[in-house]
Image 1 (cartoon, rainbow, N blue to C red):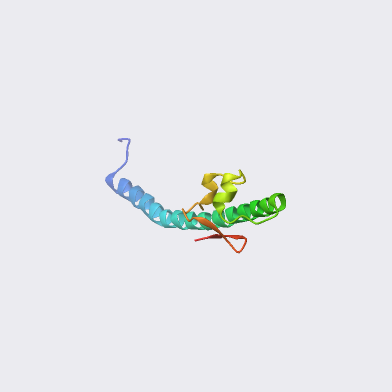
Image 2: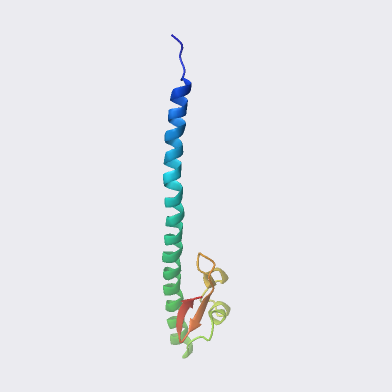
Length: 97
Protein backbone atom coordinates (compact mmCIF):
# COMPACT_ATOMS: atom_id res chain seq x y z
CA UNK A 1 0.00 0.00 0.00
CA UNK A 2 1.39 3.41 -1.02
CA UNK A 3 1.44 6.42 1.29
CA UNK A 4 0.21 9.76 -0.06
CA UNK A 5 -2.86 11.55 -1.29
CA UNK A 6 -5.01 10.67 -4.26
CA UNK A 7 -5.99 13.26 -6.84
CA UNK A 8 -9.57 13.19 -5.54
CA UNK A 9 -8.42 13.96 -1.98
CA UNK A 10 -6.25 16.85 -3.22
CA UNK A 11 -9.15 18.33 -5.21
CA UNK A 12 -11.44 18.02 -2.20
CA UNK A 13 -8.95 19.77 0.11
CA UNK A 14 -8.30 22.56 -2.41
CA UNK A 15 -12.05 23.07 -2.86
CA UNK A 16 -12.60 23.39 0.90
CA UNK A 17 -9.68 25.83 1.27
CA UNK A 18 -10.98 27.91 -1.67
CA UNK A 19 -14.45 28.12 -0.14
CA UNK A 20 -13.00 29.23 3.20
CA UNK A 21 -10.95 31.96 1.48
CA UNK A 22 -13.96 33.15 -0.54
CA UNK A 23 -16.01 33.47 2.65
CA UNK A 24 -13.39 35.25 4.77
CA UNK A 25 -11.94 37.82 2.33
CA UNK A 26 -15.14 39.94 1.98
CA UNK A 27 -15.60 39.78 5.76
CA UNK A 28 -12.08 41.11 6.33
CA UNK A 29 -12.58 44.05 3.95
CA UNK A 30 -15.87 44.90 5.64
CA UNK A 31 -14.17 44.94 9.05
CA UNK A 32 -11.54 47.34 7.71
CA UNK A 33 -14.27 49.85 6.87
CA UNK A 34 -15.72 49.53 10.38
CA UNK A 35 -12.27 50.02 11.92
CA UNK A 36 -11.68 53.15 9.82
CA UNK A 37 -15.04 54.64 10.86
CA UNK A 38 -14.55 53.93 14.56
CA UNK A 39 -10.96 55.17 14.39
CA UNK A 40 -12.09 58.43 12.82
CA UNK A 41 -14.75 58.98 15.49
CA UNK A 42 -12.17 58.35 18.22
CA UNK A 43 -9.70 60.76 16.63
CA UNK A 44 -12.41 63.43 16.38
CA UNK A 45 -12.97 63.09 20.13
CA UNK A 46 -9.23 63.52 20.72
CA UNK A 47 -9.20 66.67 18.58
CA UNK A 48 -12.29 68.00 20.41
CA UNK A 49 -10.46 67.47 23.72
CA UNK A 50 -7.45 69.37 22.41
CA UNK A 51 -9.75 72.19 21.24
CA UNK A 52 -11.03 72.48 24.81
CA UNK A 53 -7.49 72.53 26.20
CA UNK A 54 -6.48 75.21 23.71
CA UNK A 55 -9.54 77.26 24.67
CA UNK A 56 -8.77 76.95 28.41
CA UNK A 57 -5.12 77.91 28.01
CA UNK A 58 -5.49 80.67 25.41
CA UNK A 59 -8.95 82.07 26.10
CA UNK A 60 -10.19 81.46 22.55
CA UNK A 61 -10.98 78.53 20.30
CA UNK A 62 -8.47 77.68 17.57
CA UNK A 63 -9.34 78.76 14.05
CA UNK A 64 -8.01 75.61 12.42
CA UNK A 65 -6.33 72.29 13.09
CA UNK A 66 -3.06 73.88 11.98
CA UNK A 67 -3.26 76.16 15.05
CA UNK A 68 -3.40 73.06 17.26
CA UNK A 69 -0.44 71.52 15.44
CA UNK A 70 1.67 74.68 15.62
CA UNK A 71 1.03 75.02 19.37
CA UNK A 72 1.89 71.35 20.02
CA UNK A 73 -1.60 70.11 20.90
CA UNK A 74 -1.69 67.71 17.93
CA UNK A 75 0.78 66.06 15.61
CA UNK A 76 0.61 66.26 11.81
CA UNK A 77 -0.63 62.66 11.63
CA UNK A 78 -3.58 63.50 13.89
CA UNK A 79 -4.94 65.88 11.24
CA UNK A 80 -6.15 62.93 9.16
CA UNK A 81 -8.55 60.09 9.93
CA UNK A 82 -7.36 56.51 9.29
CA UNK A 83 -9.19 56.57 5.94
CA UNK A 84 -7.28 59.70 4.89
CA UNK A 85 -10.06 62.21 5.50
CA UNK A 86 -8.82 65.64 6.64
CA UNK A 87 -10.11 66.96 9.98
CA UNK A 88 -11.35 70.54 10.15
CA UNK A 89 -12.68 72.74 12.92
CA UNK A 90 -16.20 74.04 12.24
CA UNK A 91 -17.98 76.16 14.85
CA UNK A 92 -15.50 75.08 17.50
CA UNK A 93 -15.95 71.34 16.86
CA UNK A 94 -13.83 68.87 14.92
CA UNK A 95 -15.39 67.44 11.76
CA UNK A 96 -14.06 65.09 9.11
CA UNK A 97 -14.60 66.10 5.48
